[in-house]
Length: 181
Image (cartoon, rainbow, N blue to C red; front, side, top):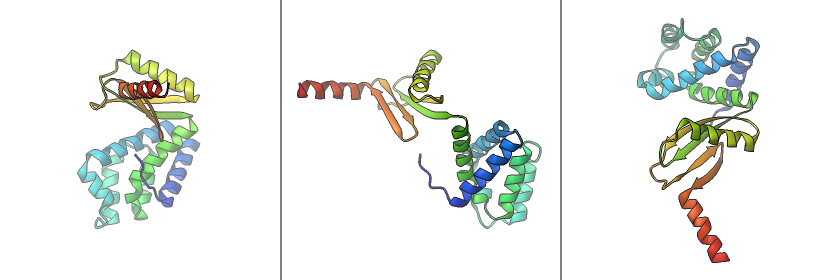
């Protein structure tokens, strides 16, 4: 999914990420921002706190302190409090996304989504992931999902690229090659 991010969100994300790397806390900070992204998706109350400009800065900072004070890495907590203080907490979804992107770039990780007609077992998922790693020369983090529109086979989305190994596409290619033969 493409989300337009602001320049400010990218700058904040870069600064937070650099601080995490300097503090040797990249993995912890990444995990906290992944959790924040999930919380923004799953909790209307938290999303409202972040996005509603009617919330006073002190109320936002107090809520952040109560919610994350003991749970979040200090880099994350300080960043959230700073963003609230600057009136930039609404940038949080974009910051979460960009921190994930920075982590993947730094660690040569590609994120792949695999759509299949039927569930994949661990062996199948591992085989696909290994082929993608060989093809792209990077570590691949793969997530599978069921797509009922597929007859069989699978489709892989890696960034903006789609690799289509579905039965429908294979049949279409066969038909085109027979017509052109």
